[in-house]
Amino acid sequence: MVPIPHFLYLAFGLFAIGLVGATRRGGGLLARLIAVEIMLCGVHLTFSIFARAWGEHAGQSYALAVGVIAAAHAIVGAGLVVLIARARADRDADALPSRAS
Image 1 (spheres, rainbow, N blue to C red):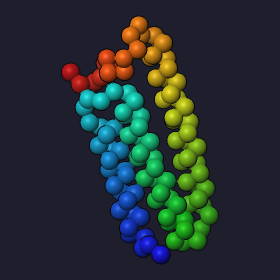
Image 2: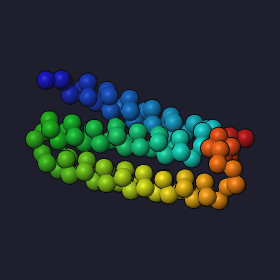
Image 3: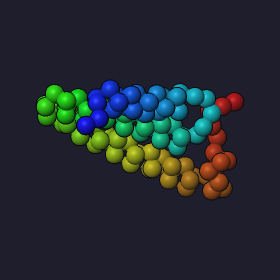
Image 4: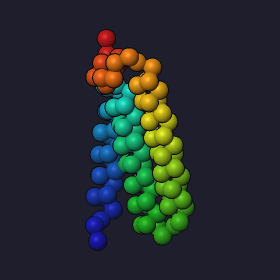
């Protein structure tokens, strides 16, 4: 069995990569949404690991709630992308404005 700290390092790495992706300047809306999803994966992994280690089912319930939030977040993000694509005349995703000035 793999020790718990290895999973925690992985969860921390996922969260850190997502945090850097969400807070860096540049990148568009879609990149930020994907970064937030990566952060939620790190949180989900942490809840699951501690639930398994302590034999509690509450962590699995929280992990399920995080998964539902992530799914809702993905649906809203996809809706925003479709809305922006319909509103713009050109369909080039690289031509969308970003926050970097």
